Image (cartoon, one colour):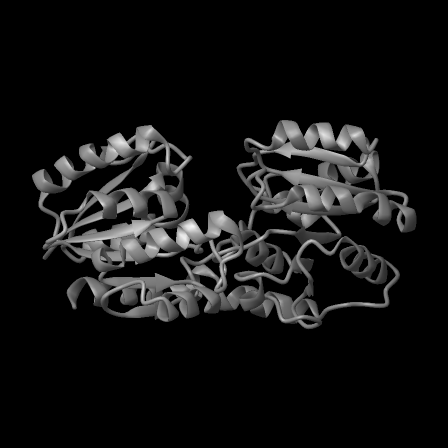
Length: 359
């Protein structure tokens, strides 16, 4: 069997999404070595989140030495940062097979702005070092094929598979008390506090929402570098009692279960686990009509979509749902969750990885 490098930007990413796949590969005889930033991996590499940081450029040399020393047969790449640095580190005449597991390209099919164009340029530059690509949504499949971002196959999957906890860690009484104490109509979003996740847009919608639903509150679950700016923005709008920063939660599904509507204003996604989990909790979901979301949400059936950054459209949807004029079939929502659940997708995704390793 082959020697496989399984790499990602952070150890947390590997822990959250890839351990069952790594365990299966090892069980079937492959030697799998993990690489990421953080504890719990075989090779720790201190990737810096800012992709073009000088520190990352120095890491290219370190990674190249590791690749030469270890002699991997196959490299499975996850996350934009790790995929960029590791492919850059590979020699031009490589013997290692490279599989890029794309969790969401950082650009649209028609790149908008300099930043997206740079990301596309980098993928084109490294396409000669990419043997195969695995994507998780139809837009990324189109991108990979259109721009010929690999030498071999582009495979479509439904991601790594989402799981929701069957055993809430917060007692139902505690959730009830929390909701009664801060407001009865709860809107919720789970994700890193970042420009990409676009929590600022959700905050900017709150004055319009509260004009129709005075007791509405927004729970922002997660943490990130944008937290301070978002907190200041909340104060500027005098919304401190209506927008609550819940921090990072070990089991965010507890809070999703407690909300009335689940929201996402993300600018782009790969395979948004938070949306899938909300569907699994049988919640009404309203999400921006962007790549990733569009593959999961069928407008009017499993949830609702609004045009990216259109605050008025989002407010109108929330108002209509609150008044009972718009509803979804909760069974349809849960059925959509099952389509993307771990139990449904694991074998297919694993077999895709295995076939490309052994091709």
